[in-house]
Image 1 (cartoon, rainbow, N blue to C red):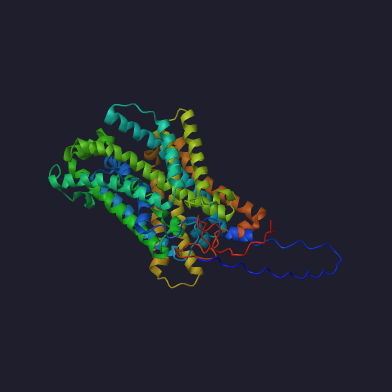
Image 2: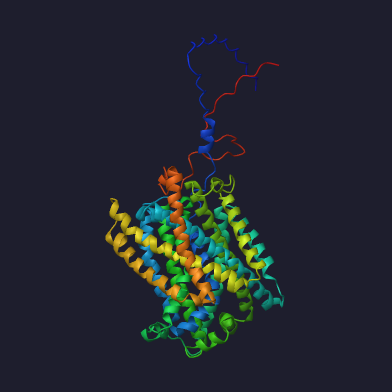
Length: 544
């Protein structure tokens, strides 16, 4: 190919006319547009990364179905008798009614702040900021305490499978590093990991149920667990308290709005799938375990060895090898729950950093993985401080680190649901909309009443969750209103000293891309400059 002839040299430009002298100070030159472009092109969360199944994996994994069933359901059977399965159904129905108004609100509020954004829309900025602080503390409490459970379940598995005595603290610290890495990676990576772990933990429970059904249980199959005489007993209140706790985390679907494909459809679907799956699955599995032992014998078996109830059932109806697998999958179930909560916490921290409530550095997104990586590092550091603090104090990893840290977190999240249910009808009274009264008034008001009852049940039975003294229980319960009041004080401080932050708190984003990539994509190796920066010819260089 012949060489392209060089273009003729450009004609010299005449000198620019001299500007007339002006009195007064010389105005400063205008700032270049590059920093604005760079700001507009800052890394953002990955758009359209999560479908309905992915978000469902996150929220169901947070609930840790295998851990809840093997570790908590035997206590529910011990307290509520053979009517325990109905308690899980009733809790699921209550939360499904809550989801009606909750998901309706998600179509009208596009903020990444989820709970606190909804509450702000209905109940005002002060209450919204109080809810934001409560959400941050609640989700951290739900996650950090579980590192104690990770240590104890790993130790139990080591003893059961190999006779090893594994110290809990190194396991918990290793778990902190592992969960940090999972949150550091992209959200779709986390969804794939949780999908695998969730299939494993639910699969082993399905295997147990299949073995019991095929063999017809201990004395034949019976639906006596759902008879009014079995359900309407004094212990049902305690079962309901445990059942509501077993659903914790299902509401986090809306946190992933910015990363969801078609969020107006994906978020409601994932929420309903999570509630329906957990409610039906919990009730079914507890019912099958009752059939495995028989209605007359199961309460005595749960009282004799609550921690071994599920392992004894699967050994009898499937085989000892399945019990070994169950031990392993309980550990992976805890890991899945930790990762799901870690991702939810990071996105709350990201939203609050963008609001200006938390330090701006926590709002940075990794340029490659599109994850809120500094928020994840901060959350991991906080977890390490709490875990090491309990270890240095000689605390028990289960009875104190897990139960004492989890309990106020659980009550805090239930309080957030109550506030959100109240906010829904208030919000829809103020705005024009085409939603029906079932979604905007009847369902949320009904949910608010049922959630208030649920919170009362949990608080009244809190000693069953903590196994602690009255003094400790009082402190743990009081932490929830104390944090909320601290949030109200923070709101007043922001209104007085940083009115611009207070004014824009929980405001709607300027645009909602509906799952598409931001208009200014990140640089790639083949495209060193952001696409939205106009291409300008470089300045001519002097000839050598």
